[in-house]
Amino acid sequence: MKKRRDMAFSAFFLAPALIVFVLLIIIPIVMTLEYSLTSWRGVGEMNFVGLENYIKLFQDRNYITTVLNSFILLIIGLVVQLSFGMVGAFLVSRLNRGYKFYRSVYYLPSIISAAAMALLFSIFFNADMGPFNEILSALGFGDSIAGRSWLSDSSVVIYFVAVPQIWQYMGQQFIIYLAAVQNIPEELFESASLDGASSAKMFFKITVPSLRPITSVVVILIITGCLKAFDYPWIMTTGGPGYSSSYMAVMMYREVFKNGHFGYGSAVAMSILFISLILVVIYNQANDSLGSEKNQEKRARRRRMKI
Amino acid sequence: MLNKVTAPIGYVAKIGKFIFLTVFAILALFPFYWMLVNSFRSNDQIYSNALGFPEQINFDNFVRAWQVGNIGTYFFNTLFVSVVAVALILVISAMAAYVLAKVWNSKVLYLLFSLGLMIPAHTIIVPLFSIFNKVGLTNNFLSIILSYLAMELSLSIFILKGFMVALPKELDEAATIDGCSRTGAFFRVILPISLPGLATVGILAFLFCWNEFLIPLVLITKSEMKMLSQGIQDLNGQYVSELGVMFAGVVMMALPVVVVYLIFQEQVIRGMVAGAVKG
Image (cartoon, rainbow over all chains, first blue to last red):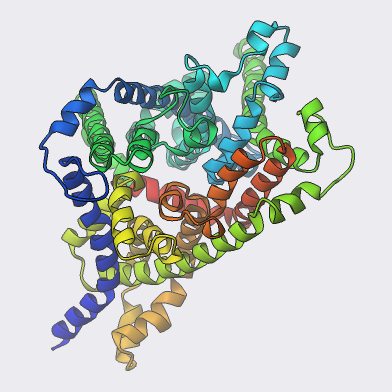
């Protein structure tokens, strides 16, 4: 009797979440996959074309450009955010004063709208009045450098779109590392400093190895975060000139909502999901084989970590 | 002896540490300083020196952005949508989280919901557009509210389930013995005691709704129904020669979020870390 009442209650309480989730997440994913196998243009008949859209992707130079751009963002993100995250968390966690101040300040940019930040940076890099060029000319660069319009130069524009985004979300990885650093037993640092170890040595011998389990979380966050990037290029350059500052998600948007290629654009959308999954799997494999001996111990430590 | 050798290295390390922390703090804060200062300056002043100080405090840019740039309309649109979406997210995810935490610990459902953590908006945005278009809900706040609800559901259930599992079992047992139905126990006992968890989830959801760009960009095209993130983009197109207005728009979009952050920092950070690590 009681069991049956619990079941009715569970069904009633789960229903709204399940309905929304199935209707607006699960079914749409299946639909995107379905669209990607058609030549649909948003109206009229949906003609099944098999894998044609995916084959076309490999031959589309614009798509290759957007994949490379997404990878540029990813590489900058990994290098900058991992190193700042670890070093920053190590230094801030060992502060006697100012811990809360630095934590608030470093995380602050991450909570602001990317659209608003992107607009700010498009002014900052503006060729005519942007402070970036003013700073360059104050540093003694001539007009050939300090007069360039960075955001309409297809050879460099991607860096001017990528770096601000990496900057904005640096604090996110830092905060995760900071929470993890605090779970490293303090005795490790105490005995190391009694042995006369320098800060640098403590960082490389204690902090970096202890953070390995959390690094795998952070790397996956950076991969998924970078591959879905859209806001910065769309606000700063609308992905141009040409496709030189478009990421994969920008290409998806342009194909579907500007050119009406629902089928082809959906294939781009699915390819982002596939590439993310492939990268995560490759990373996990590499990570596991690297640390296979110590795995047991690391997993145990991860379980003990309470965040 | 040993100390004398390491002492100078200690100082170098200390100075290096200080420089590192300060440089990154300046990098993080500079854009905020820059947008605030320039939002009070006239267009001519910004054009002549984009890094200068304001000569007088001038609110013209804010007035123009609010009225002519439509930021006022967008501000209240965004506020309305965010508040309704957050309320729905809280109620619906708390109900689901309670069942998963205390009544029926279904691994399958938990896995299904955690799938949502890995789905970015752009993989579902095309079908969302055609579904809402078919039922006539594009250019309707309901379509973005439902989309936000779907996007935030997984993370919210995750965090709330983690919170509710830790609640003592005796709590709802006592309530049921006292004659409360399970539903009554949920609303009268569990929800009030879960307030810290709800605060974390609510704030994270609010930040997401306030800042989201792609979903409204696709679902809303009528100019009087746009969200702030779209309004910001329009400022870039229409007011290219009015930089002060653009700065004022950015400030007005960022301000509520910064205020929420300064008040609820602990919850924001705790929620972010919990979501990231469990996801």
